Length: 278
Image 1 (tube, rainbow, N blue to C red):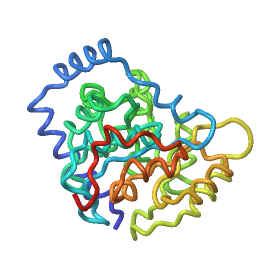
Image 2 (tube, one colour):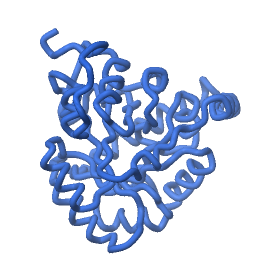
Image 3 (cartoon, rainbow, N blue to C red):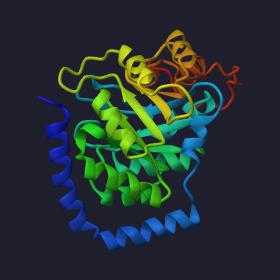
Image 4 (tube, helix red, strand yellow):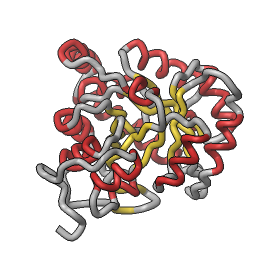
């Protein structure tokens, strides 16, 4: 069975409870205040810079990997990502399967100046308003989780709110649907939704379907963690790569991030991320 089916069903149920607790009009007013006082940061521009950009992800656990990292505050991790040269952050906000929360978005925005992606199963415009309120600059739209009308509506409403939409695809059909929405930012996820296996060749296969010339900004997702792999992505003219688990598991998060961004060694003074053994 497609792994998204039960997660999306549970997300829709949880959303009905959240709407009852915080009505949409209350959320919209809060979102407008946040956008006015703290405008969205330039997520798309950060990934469009020359060279391969790194989106560093905070993820406590996953259905396939179980617990990933405990005992370190989110603020410490995202600061290490920023010092290590990441161009943007991805923050998991889904709770039951990934251990995240909307408060994680708020904490990340307070701790780092980098633009932030809300990584979650977005199925309703209510979640776009939540993303704005809690500090996201971009949201994830998973093509496999949405009908085409839902995808088009959420994509258009995100842009109208000033949010960037990372439209995630897994195969050629989904890529066609993403392009039909006018997506400016496409994520190619190498994980099979039925087996949960990762095949990094998928990025290169789907990249070839985009053709030559200007097109959407492309983000490679799942399975990439080594500098040589990132060099191959850069040669293929991928714009950005999203890395989470490999960085979260590393003994020295800042150093591991710098190894992927090829940034010069910074001063050790002020480092606040302990090693795994601390």
